[in-house]
Length: 96
Image (cartoon, rainbow, N blue to C red; front, side):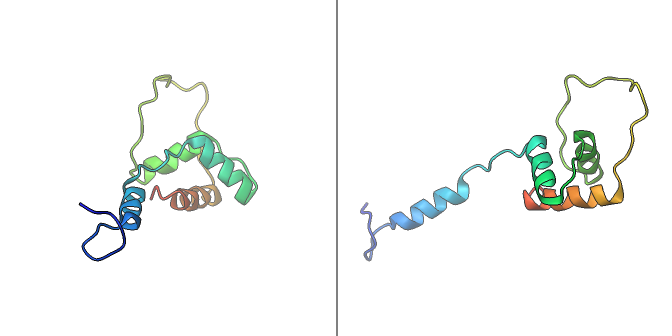
């Protein structure tokens, strides 16, 4: 097996491109999503709002080991503007 750019040889450039395509993507965290929204749109969203939008889209959710069974106060819901902003951010990070 010969490597190179000539005929009958395996291109190192193609090998590198294939390796880049198969490289695992960086895991996007809620903190990264929050920072992107704050920087791009100028306001802060709570992680519960991000989770609610992800849940409404049917995206996979991770088990929360510290979740409480009963909330101390009723949970508020994100505004329509926040929902659209979170959806656009999830598209930016290629989650949806």
